[in-house]
Image 1 (cartoon, rainbow, N blue to C red):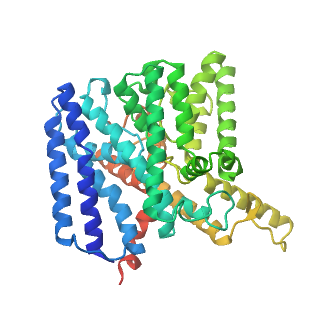
Image 2: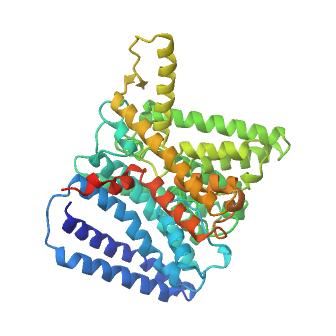
Image 3: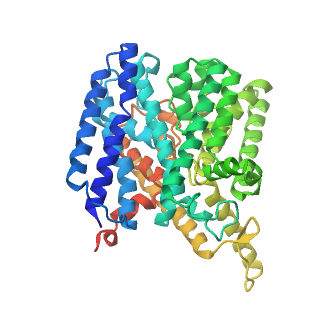
Length: 482
């Protein structure tokens, strides 16, 4: 473990992160909302902490090893989330406790979108913008982590896209150098954000709302500048734009890179994960729209409009709202929530277990059924016509097993704080899948649950965003042995 190198990287990260508070200072000055001192203080504390962490070790240039990488990745979200909470804690409006400020910051950077704040329409513009910016920065961090960093460490959903797995992405990196990979991903992410903001603006949003919502749409975050979320605008055009960009952002960014490089979309339709993702979205959308219409919840037009938007929003783990799906009839609330457990594709800003893992679990289950009939047969698990190594299948089952055990442990923890079963179950699922909205007492916001429950959910959000093993490995004795 090379602590010196870790300190150097962490110091640089904090100094860079402090600069991201500058736009909020400028917005506060422009709108004269009185929150500028909180951001100036937060920026100063973050910068000088980073500077004095980096200064003693600035000349160190040793190679970053695998274990160092694990620690840096975890510190990226934990430490930056803590420092990101400073302006939220210091500002007078909203008046947040330390727990609530950390919860909001972690929710933003992890792109979960769960909030403890109400009265968004009356908040200072700089605070509203800062929340959206946290999600946008977290989303970009996820993409670089998933596509450029985690494969080097041998973990994460993108590990399933190695040479043995069919599809367009067969190498660990999109370009020969990791810096070039990160740069390419930045360009794609920034381009999508600009296109989304422009579309929202043309569709009728103010420039401030358009930019703010483009941040949380492309990041699959779900924070909004209004309590009513997207429903505030009551615009079919805005909702359609949201659907398109939520779907685009939930697709593996490696596919976007290849589409851009080859000027062709054919790679999307060669990718088994993308095809399975479209199948699940279509199936869930058709069934949801059908139930809403047949139960006379809405007219057919409104069933299509509200049903399609909520399916895409929840299934992609974004969390925007045009209707309160928790009040929908039959099994729809549970079904939509279950779709969030699948989540987005590997290498995207989406949360959940990832589509490729669910696809492999289903194929492994079918193989076991076939083995009952033919015990001696050699039946490989195939994706896109190629066999998947058993070690990949074992890794997927290992992830799923640990995921479910952690889910149960945290569910019991929330129940112990006094929450009812529906609230506790949905809160853990929402945090672990980085969804945001829940059911029961957390359908609207998380402000009324006990502080201990919020800290459990903070851990759940970090576990979900770091794909569980990245965080858990730090708690094993083997990790710290020389």
